[in-house]
Image (cartoon, rainbow, N blue to C red; front, side, top):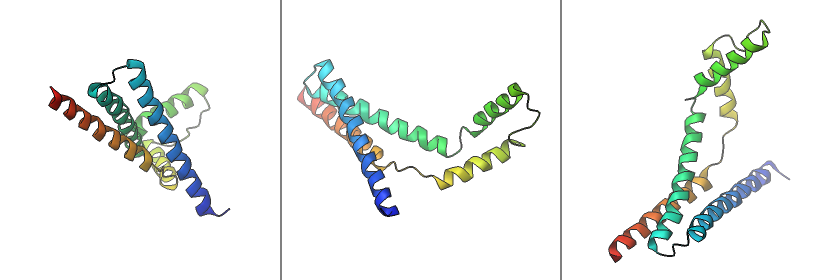
Length: 135
């Protein structure tokens, strides 16, 4: 198996996972609430869509290094509590550079989550407009 085949199979798995997550989330909201109107459809599409997009945005913010200083605090706290006498990293800048180099080598494939999240939000808005037009 070539590297491209492995990458393609990982992407396919992510598409399947995204489909499963959104399908289960939609079914739980739509069928457990038993609101089979445009409002129920709007909620069942919009809530999972916003949740998925929010998760992706939080992941992207974290990967951009927004939480590195907080993580460095916990690394220093661990070093202090173990009383090793040595620091894992000399300072926060060194820790940020280390994390940055690791992030560059491992980029996540988020396209299925963005497409499903955005599509579900758009579908939720469409059903909301239909609900309001029906009144």
